Length: 227
Length: 388
Image (cartoon, rainbow over the protein chains, first blue to last red):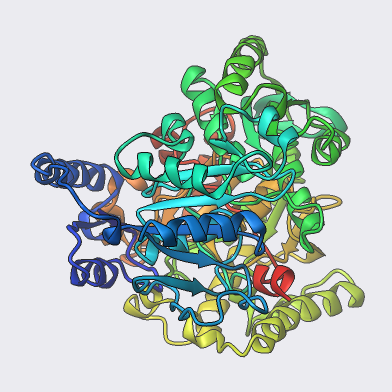
């Protein structure tokens, strides 16, 4: 459901069309188009009702791990990131990793680079210049990841993502215990296989901590100051 | 002489509202802030995307934004939601600016749910205290008015902006303060504004600020004309940024320019000030409110409903068609100047009267809707800052 003002540099109708071209259900409304906020809310609620009606018929069906794409959000390559990726590869799960800036030296030299907003291929791939934390979540969601593992740095707090379950892994034991309700796992205590086991459970519908609390973070990567 | 009543704050400042604000200091605290005001609907919360990195090159700008917002005189008290109790820099800054600040750390409460449970009784107590406070007689000089335009069209510079300029001049004549901002939308008007400066030094500052913004954009390898005027401005008949700017600058009336302040910085005294902000509607509004604006007037040709959680925003349409089309979203129509039923002087006086009514407690359309847009403004690209 795209809600536009009407003056935007990225025009809402065009954005809705781009989404529809990817095969996603979409609706569009706009404040200037509809004549104000109240009309837009009324029209938007009707449209969301239509979308919800469509999804009511969706049912889970059995899939193999080959249908799964795990998004890895991390500030920097780490042994745990490698362990999660190795466990995923052994299980036949594809992995796309987001890096804040250019690809670090030695990170998956054979894996292709995925353009920002492009679908990740099967196997391993890398999104460069994805930003940090919740910015990476948006990049990974745009690449098609169905679950994101967020490997936080020491002392960093967890975020969710509006549309993709985020398994939040604390960077150190102290931060994990201080924010125990908002993290899923303590990265100082956990193996790659244990992270993957939770990922598979979340793929199958078990809510991650971010989903349980209703976190709906959405942070667009900015590349320059605002004009 | 019109009489006014408001809430007296420290340092001779005046509030025209008495909000309790719940302000996250970190984007991971947004949800807690949102849940707290679900529990105490009399309070207001905003959210943002800042990850509170101490090594952020824009730290001072962002700290001034959050602290200034919390210390705005329309706020009775602010409950800041941070991550660690030891991170007190922004709360301390807000206190030094005259705010009443309480800091709750999520790490002391195991995360979101515990933070909400711990904060709701505090926020409820503060809203009860705020509700018990009475307005007292307030001078017009206590008004600090933010001037803004968004979704401009070819009529902005002919009707709403110059009428707002008349209203600004009326406020300044009573000893008040106005803030003109959106620096990129002053490109082309810098010589006119500099010529009105109270001193040659202020005049040079006006020129340097506006040219500095233009240069910063050029240094990024970006042509400002790709984004200014916006597609909506162009559809509304604006052809160039200079044309847009000459109209935008009219919001400042004919008054001398008293000085230039940085983003989110408070003017040092009464008069017309220029604040260095982006043209982005929300970032600009947040900058002016963080700089102490307790009321704002916002002209629009294409129509935009944006508001502020703590500062009343009066929406002024440039044309009657958009006023009627977006009637619920706009407070007053300056389009009547076009058909001759109003003049700039009479419309400016009507805007001034509405400013006084809103200052006295009348709700604006964005307040009735509950608009509470908020955004952090950066000067440094996060990509450049953190990614080498």
